[in-house]
Length: 337
Ligand code: KG4
Ligand code: ZN
Image 1: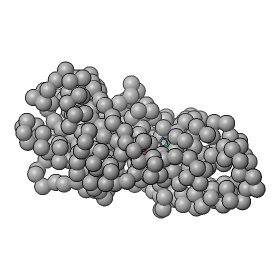
Image 2: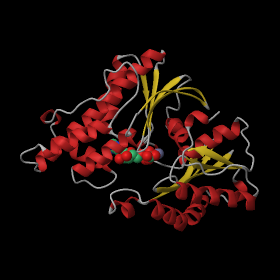
Image 3: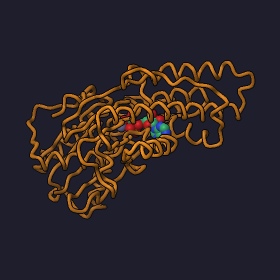
Image 4: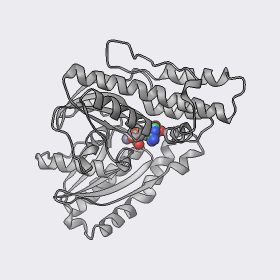
């Protein structure tokens, strides 16, 4: 089975083809990061226009890369939410149009379900069910118990900002461009995290929820309160910010695995690309007898490979779709079956 995946929920236009025998056989991403960087964040209308400009040609190139054409595609999987409404509509409208013209079934895919199963694209593959997943992106921070495809139980989530959002907002305080996560990570490499004492919000609360807005404010006050906020101080504050976020995510994830009696942990979403978090989680998980599953870097941030992959799983289990679906910017993972 060959599934063509389309992702356009935010600022990456991506197309990939997943073959159930060979894995990903072709994929391309057109990033809009530079276009949005000068605005300090994603501008929704510009994102939609950029997707519209590049998506049809990108799909043609991916088909050519894979040495196939539309009749060779058995199904189309498209991100239908959550995300920016205009951006989602471009992908969904394109998918439904090419599906109709070429008589190919089209399945709407939940963006976060794509992230959840992204480690399945690595050589190691997915762990057996049940597993715990830490989903950490620009819009989400969630701990989810996964008992099967469509069987998700939210164990904990952020009550305010997402971890990626905290990285992005702290980066602004440090005068770094968008997206802030990779920029903070780069700067943190030469920083001394012990110079600044930052809080670990909700770490000792008897639940698995997170809160990152206080941490963002603490970063702001640390910068303001610093007598000489020079380059070295910025580097140290970047390291302290990264460590505080990684520390909370690591400890809560491990506790959640233990509370649920689950011994496999998956990390997914853009923040899963963070090396400090990966290293810390790897170490603590090993100490606690929990096996960590991490997607390769290119499948941590937004991509179409993960959408095609989940599409293939859903087509294989016989999911078929009626015509009455639409882009849904606030689609909840809990509503999936
Ligand atoms: O999953 P993603 O690509 O898009 C969303 O669905 O949100 O995640 C984007 C988020 C951004 O907040 C970005 O700053 C963060 O992931 N991010 C990172 C790293 N790479 C991306 N955060 C920390 N360290 C990184 N290396
Ligand atoms: Zn994402």
